[in-house]
Length: 189
Image (cartoon, rainbow, N blue to C red; front, side, top):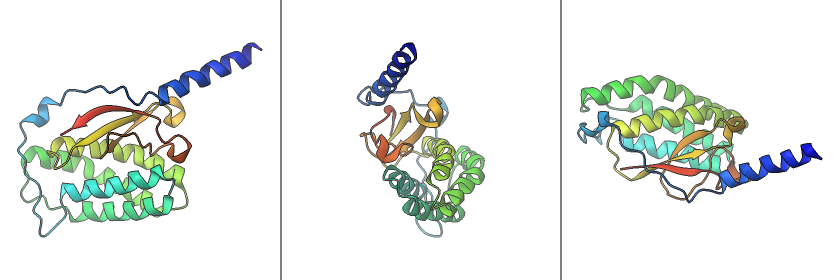
């Protein structure tokens, strides 16, 4: 009886955490990025940060629907956008940030692209890719408002973050099982 009570208490706590998506906290923007000028990559000759973010959001939205095939298409497009990114007109701080993330982010996008039938594996790579995309959008002033969201239940309760284009929680880690599990952590402008 004691084990049942503890199990029920744990489930109640977990569900409370996941249904708490109306609690928002605004994190302060990093001082390192406030001095960076808005200098998006040129529209011709290569991809832009905006295009990279669009492909990332494609993956995120596919994972929220448990659609591994569509996530794979987004992963392939994202890897291609990283390969075509034109660094010619970005400032040195942005080049450093880009250089720090491009290798890992491309690898994660490629893994997502090659594993259409393994959505759990795609989500593992999406977790690290999300950290890279967050760093990217912080270094390159957003051309749109984005949101950093957090799911406390993913990865056996270790949690994970992602970047979203909507305030509404649409969880890419738990998909259709728990689509609104998570909280808004930061608005990125």
